[in-house]
Amino acid sequence: MITAEAVTSPFGRLANRVKREILTNVTPLRWAADGLHEERRRKWAPHLPALDPDQAALVSTLQREGVRIGRLDDLAIPTTDALKTALDRVAGPLAAMAPGRASTVRPSLDELLADLSLWRWGLQDRLLDIVENYLGVPARYYGADVRREVGNNQTVGVRQWHRDAEDRRTVKILVWLNDVDDEGGPYAFVPLAETLSAVERLHYVAGFVDDTKVIRMVAPGSVTTATGPKWTAVVADNCRLLHRATPPVARDRLSVTFTWSSRTPMKTEEAPAFTPDHLRAIRSGLTERQMACLPPAMAQG
Image 1 (cartoon, rainbow, N blue to C red):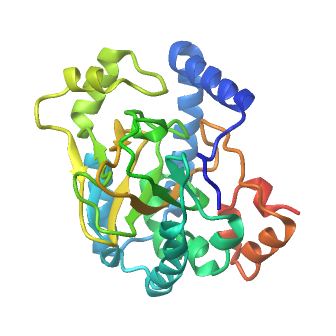
Image 2 (cartoon, rainbow, N blue to C red):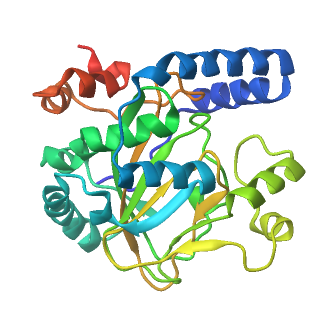
Image 3 (tube, rainbow, N blue to C red):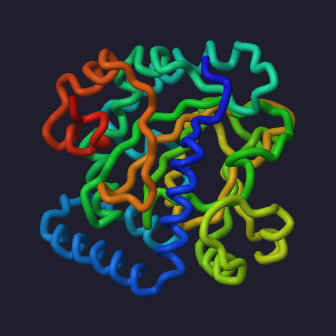
């Protein structure tokens, strides 16, 4: 088991922060970068996959609100039953282990990849079609992050308010692996219109924001929490929304998160320490489209 946050090296965090600061504050460079991105979207628009009404409705909701909360089964992904079985196999031992002093606990990579239907779920064509239409460009897929947030009421790491910095837009699907109530560490977010207003007033670029500052910036009662039973799914663009994992108090929270960005992200993510055997297993049998979605370090070699 891994009993710590997955982290980028200090040098990597500094480089990403500097890049974000430059692109935010140096107007000519921001215009140039945004222009290149819009050109990519324009060129890819004729190649966007067709969507059925349910897929199109989800994309529309993400564009308008940045988030949708519902049931995992509502996404109608063909391999979801296999995913649930694989997640139960991982979640059981994860819930039973002694966390020590850690606030976040993850399975080992061997445990995560023991059943590849878990990691590969995010490479299903139906999902990639949704993500690609929302991003407007081909997607990069970062895999599955299974984690246990320990109910210690500690406000650390992603339990603080922030926006993700990976890209201009991302798609994340967060799935509860146990029932989550208000004291069990639900995902919390500030609605999109209020997020944009708060970000402007805070002169926010990246990093964590103190809870008291966020509360002062938003209307009373506007913060929304995604409570729900096991297999509740939160589909969100965390690069657009101020959000956090509410510190769990009364019980632990078990979840899995799947993440997609564009293939030219704003932030350089360090790949997990997969072994050559791990990478061969992940790549085995993938289609050309699926291979193209892997980060370069995983797709090569």
